Length: 470
Image (cartoon, rainbow, N blue to C red; front, side):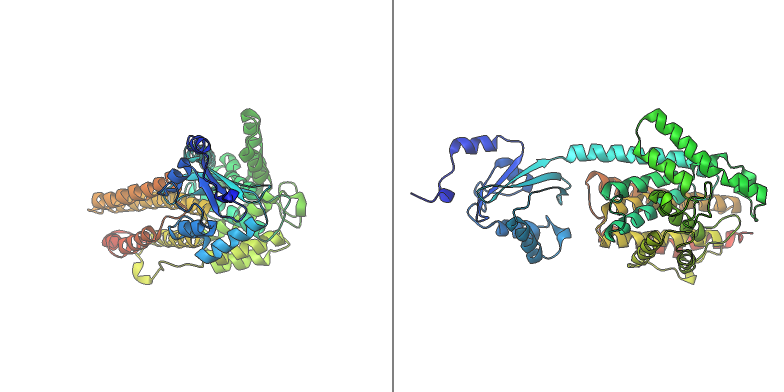
């Protein structure tokens, strides 16, 4: 009689397994492929009822890796060796992963008492898209709430997205560094990232004469401005009570109230110090200051990244939490890892505001490339949203200047802008609905070339019509 592992399959069991919606893969105690069902072969696009049956699981893993199933896992041999090492230890696991065709699989591996493993695979693409749509709707709602307060700023909606992205990156770096392990996990990173969008919602109560004042504030004006922290927290707490338990509103209220507190206790509104300040507030404090320093305001020109980072580093332990400051510095260094497009003086259109906006667009594309190199899908998604928002703001600002200057080819320029806006929106939809992990080198190169050529060609045509900003 043949050994048990090599006995023919029971037809009744085989038919039953083929009737399952879930994919099924059975490995014996020697990690040889013993059996798989029709759903497994369909989900993994494997031809042949007995393909790989009787062969080592390592052969199947290597085949799938070479086909691009685990491209983000690096070298095939290293990936297979690492996977087999974990299996030799009898470790169960459950993951969700996206196939190259965009299908989201829920995969569970259970070790058997007699040796070997049973894997199950389920297509959860529809559920994943529904959840992502809910999350995007929640994010859009949060952004809309923030925009009510930010609508008087020049780059409406983009400041809060930039701050949110940096908050998420700092939180992720804290997790990688092993800081605050009782607080910072994957869920916290996502929650604080979105909640931070609401950090300045209390500015809705700040008068224009103070918010947009080009010079220093008086003591009374400063006291009025400082009220926005408590006002924002109160608005979000009220919304939280109305909506029920919303983690975004709860963390958002903490951030709104405490992102102007200082680590040494000299901030406002309550003079909290050290770990009495919620971690979310300590993280957002740095992100908000950095973006404010890097942005044009009625009272200041934008700072360089080097100057802004140096200023924040000098405030380590006084204004800012030391561990959070260190994580921030690491994030900024990582941001500069990839540079697809660089500013040159030949790109200037003779208007400082437009030139600054072009620099920001270039920097955003470079940071998108860096996020791609790190295989950070949530970060890529955030930067795409940011790019769309800032491009929309820039195009509107630029078209208004051209209209005021009487530029004769405004409509042609507007159509070029509209074409780009539609293209990048389509890229976002494809990225989201196909659950891609990257936008791809072709798209990054298109972004680089479009922006560079647009600035050097089309935008130079209106140069003589624009006056320098006063």
